Image 1: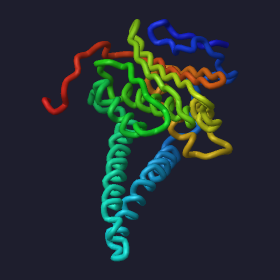
Image 2: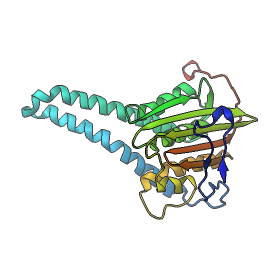
Image 3: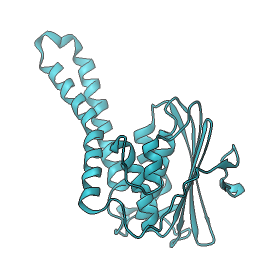
Image 4: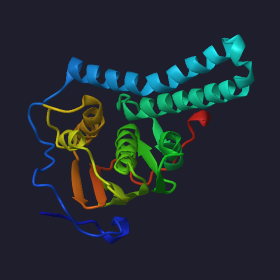
Length: 252
């Protein structure tokens, strides 16, 4: 089985082989839903927040330590950096894991900022080829989760490219990652297939599963392709607001 992309959104490395397991969005019974799903998401958010929150506390402890007054500037820098990370996480999580029932819309630039707030300064670069497009809450949720997973597929660094195309009433969200040891962890692949995790780390599984669930809720599909040093992920969703003009929410 092969995964092909139209020329306008194709990863530069071309056609890649899809894993033998189909990313099935039509399962009648969700493997994880309701309270259990909420528990998994809450656990992930706590895991993400604890590192910068702990760093803020460490910085405050240094400020309170009479013997560490020579490290005051370092402590303030740590607090400032960690607080910024916390704010970036909260802004990202509000859209990535928030309810999709709102009529709120997002510009491509706004969503880029949410993803870049978490990925800037890492080993991988992010090439955001989205342009001045507009996305519903559900589309935005799918796009930033897909983008984050694309960058996460490059633990040793490399180039992540995110593109968006609208055609024939369909919205195509494509993330391609190329670099040394580019890969998705086994737990992530299980999540993208919409399957329950039976072994491994739930924190590596829940966000890919959430992306699968988002695509399913939208009536769309996911495609995953991998080869050595390369990963491509595509979400195809029905597009109900093709090329709608963006309205700044502060002007409403």
